Image 1 (cartoon, rainbow, N blue to C red):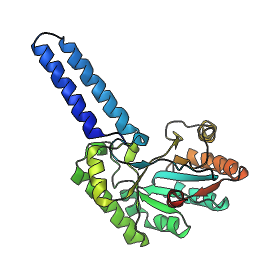
Image 2 (image 1 turned 30 degrees about the vertical axis):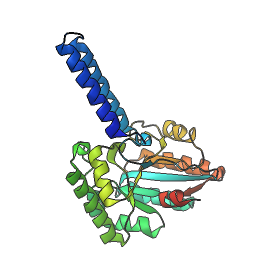
Image 3 (image 1 turned 90 degrees about the vertical axis):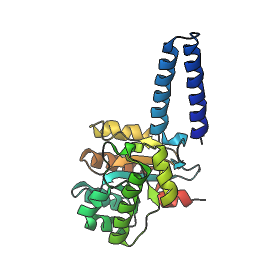
Length: 254
């Protein structure tokens, strides 16, 4: 894990040295401007790269030789597409993990219950999933996480121990909140980009070209193209004798 506090202290020291040299007219102010730009770029990179474990430890894959894969779905439950995803999973005897948004859980409790009844796992994906959620304070994150956890438990009777940050973005404030709530922070190592690409073949090929034992695949159950993508992936993984398991199973696999 990258020590963020140490890196921040070092960067601050460098900036202070540059300021001193600028005051003494030994350096141009452009050195400070460039260093600040580099710092902001690096901050963005580490925030969007969960596997670097900069702010908090994230589970992004399992080191194993067993042919097991974890399928995960974000942003549901969706009233039209999530039931169809469940039907496909049942057809291929596959298990998956659904990272649900709290406000959608509130609207579609029957689908959340169906996910549990069919042997899948549910994870917390915040309550709002707002576009500005990464800028929330520790208290703001706690409210997002606790509210969604409470809804899942109320509907299913199950307490989830899984959390996935919206957009895969981690921050110091989120890390502080997760220390209080204590879930496993779950990322991925195969991103389908199914919300970006629209052609199912392009998406499924992108996923299948990166498959290896212990992988965690990121998909979404909120759009139509994901159904064709999922079916193709399930067909190939079934043919290649992969077991498709929940994050809980993958995490605990020995």
